[in-house]
Image (cartoon, rainbow, N blue to C red; front, side):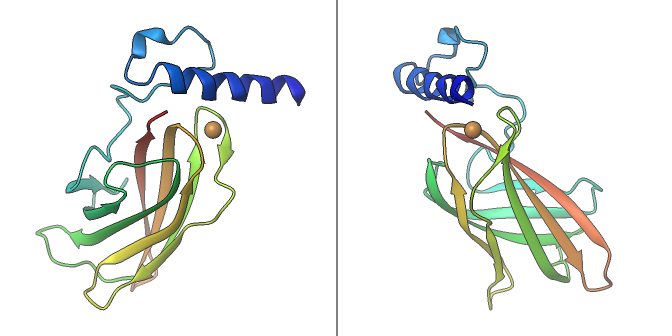
Length: 155
Ligand SMILES: [Cu+2]
């Protein structure tokens, strides 16, 4: 446990001193986001396709605009093939750091806005590195689709 904590602190320190310089990745536990091929939340607006290929999540807003450590809020519309708004009755979300093997300590909340878009709030990306936000979308007919959003929180 102490050993793990030490490694975590090292990651944070390295992240602070080498931000923007991926070549300084001189620790096995360092996780840099620059150029990470998994990142698909590359800017706003951006489209992310569900794993089954049937839905497109059109991200229209993010606060802050570039993911930062702390609370983030994202807005997205869910479209089916052809661009029509998909009939989604619920969205659940979970945030996880795949390279560190831990979730966020807080559960994100997805809310359907009157405009028909979804607001993902309470999204706490608690440290620098790659985050995977799994969105599970339940259609009106009860079937589900999953979308994986990979975001980089700069250190
Ligand atoms: Cu972490």
